[in-house]
Length: 139
Image (cartoon, rainbow, N blue to C red; front, side, top):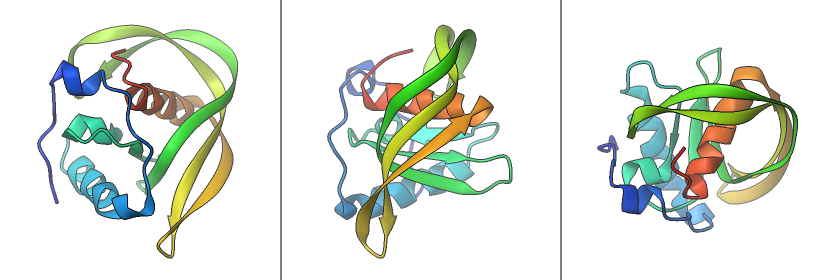
């Protein structure tokens, strides 16, 4: 279901609770909502008002990827970046890694399965942005 974006800083600055397989509908809401947003490539659950650690991002090939409980385990090649955000009015200056190792859960046949993957470049930056959202950071 398509949801409205949340700009409430009290919600956006709240650390998200651990997600479970029961949050599958929330993941679908994120995908549905992201598909309707022009020039948007990622979305975290608190950006639609739900403080659960669920995120979705779109890869360069147009595929949507959902992560439950994402966590940055390691980062390489830190650099400065300026980011915009769907739910914040002003761009933010941040430090982002060019390469990250991420642990997350993936929903497979109704169960959360732990995964670890490396991401680089733009995908790494988006994932770091969404992990910040899950931690309640207003970048």
